[in-house]
Amino acid sequence: MPVTKKTNAQLFFNGILNENPIFRLALSMCPAVGISTSLMNGLLLGIAVLFVQVASSCTIAAIKDYIHPRIRIPTYTLTIATWVTVIDLSLAAFVPEAYKAMGIFVKLIVAFAIITMRLEMFAAKNPVVPSFWDGLGMGLGFTFGMMTLGFVRELLGAGTLFGHDVLGTRPLLFFILPAAGFFCVGFIMAIFNYVELVFNRIKKKS
Amino acid sequence: MKQILRITVGLTVSCLIAAFIMGAVFTVTDKRKKHNEHLNVQETMLGLLGYSKKNPPPGDLKFHRIYRYIVEDGKSKYLGYMVPVEEGGKEDYQLVLIGLKGDFVSSYKLSIAPEKAEEAVEREAAINQVLKPPKTFTYADAVIVAERGGKRVAYLLPGEFPGFKTFITVMLALDPGFKILGLEIMEQEEDPGLGAEISQEYFKNQFKDKSFKKMKEIKVVKEPLPDEYRRFLERKKWKEGMFTREEIERIRSKYQDHDIYALTGATISSKSVTRGVKNMVKKFAYRIKILDGVIASRKLAVAF
Image (cartoon, rainbow over the protein chains, first blue to last red):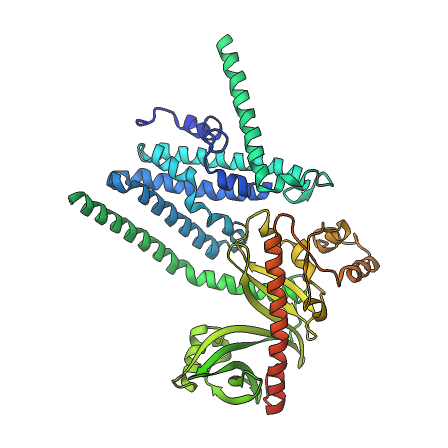
């Protein structure tokens, strides 16, 4: 992929819909399936990924000329790990309230495929500003995906939303378990594909 | 060859830069992080005893910390209890060595200020002054005794045991008769949505009010948590007046001697916590009885 010609707004929405990390790129499935058991978990992990993604994308875009191509992947991992540590330590020191809720999610991020992939595919070839928008879009796209999954799974599995009782019963406990994560991802992916199909058909006709 | 060299140098340099950044952030944040953790522990301790911002603790509530060390002298092993003693209104620390069978061995006065005793390094320095080689010592654990008006109100036990993924750190509160007053999960890295539910009220509050007799043989049952019990355990979340006082008493006594209901999809985490708490209570009850025996027979003027 050469230097992007897309505008910042296009890059931003690209991450949320066209190249949604979970439903279109099918990346970072482990956390998507494992953690999207509730809306809150999805939101918190999404925010954590958003910060790390934006920070790492900008860093790599800024220092890409100094990285030897043979060691780019270790450098990406190192960058992500550094940002994760920095965010983890700063949260613990300055916002202990947020750390109580988010600490466990931030530590998980180091090995996320979506971040490494975005650094390799985009930030390593583009300047800082587009990388920022791409990172922001991807982070929000991930948050959106996680929250959609969390919404379905929490509502069906526990009958609650954000921990508040909505349905009054627990219709299908199965949805809380990891296996159901795959089902949910599959279903929502199918919906995405179907919408795209219909959309393209309408486009052709007109 | 040139390639290898460039790769090595490149990797080393990037590692060094990363290490430098992380180190710098660590130095900047470490003090505040420790401070926050300290506040958190303090808040948890008060919370377990039923105090909060709305219901502040009484002024005469005091916490005394006892530190336990394992002391080795050649082949023989002792337990070294670092206990606070009160002499003429001044609090001091003494190191009491007890044999494995509960017999008194010796005691030493330690020169350490009570407010500095919370720092592990300071404690070690003070013990090093009295325990000369070949005696060696290792830190085991600590107990916090809550005292009010010369009477013990509760024991607070910080503890750690293996969970499903890594160690789970907890704080357990016991009353003087070793009945559980409350359990708080301090740190855990179980799976979110499954094992991580151990820190939810409907799990950890199940331990509340369990008697010492029950705790000695407590098990985990794979039964669904009854709805009324769940609402009862989570009653902090609901509006006041959801339960009448009689109802609270009724549900409390109904489930008081019941085993722990396992979390759905996280039996191992549930079992680990139950086993961990059970061991903590059993071991502590045994140890404190021995320590109390020695304190009584030696007429130590302990502060608690």
